[in-house]
Image (cartoon, rainbow, N blue to C red):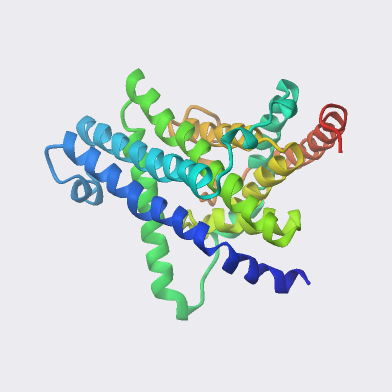
Length: 303
């Protein structure tokens, strides 16, 4: 039954996905490129592709990325929800399900999962695609390398204003925008069509992972997408996955600045291994934390 429902669900959600993709792939990038080009004297995209780095380029790229996310992943989805779906935004953030203890625990669970899934990260990073997919593999590697280079430019400046700007662009805005799109819109759409929360959660998680265009980080991103999806389903409040996504992004940003031990061994695209004891302790503590969240949730939110 579930196997036959999933493709039908995607077809029924095609109009929503089209509107979201227009914002994500066209309107947002155009807005970002326009703003970035205004403040940059050279050829913005050419200098990025040529692996140049300067404070002016970092500032322009910061504005570009920020405008792309703000317009494509926040403003357009808000219009989708308010105008097309005719739903109030307050419905995504019911005050009754908000609790600081649960927010703290889900944040801890997010960090623990980053460590616990490191063997899966290593396995996924070592994928070797069939020869028939060699062209796709080259494209995937190029896209992944470009994404890494963009982050390296954004984190190349160490002044307080640049770090603050990098945090907004790579941590704050994506956490809001991506959860608004993948959980607030897509997961809810899939849930409404399939009436099966597991199908909706994992379907949205797969789309979430594919949208990053990182084949060598595909599986761990699906797992994190599912974690965010279950947090949203169990709480009924989009604030929970937003906070979890924010914590994950902030953790990755700190690793980009190499401010933590073993900073080169984290991240969904890394291939270095972590100490086995870390993985075992993190997985065990993660399970215990999820159980504690479940018990507290029953008392606060109910069934």
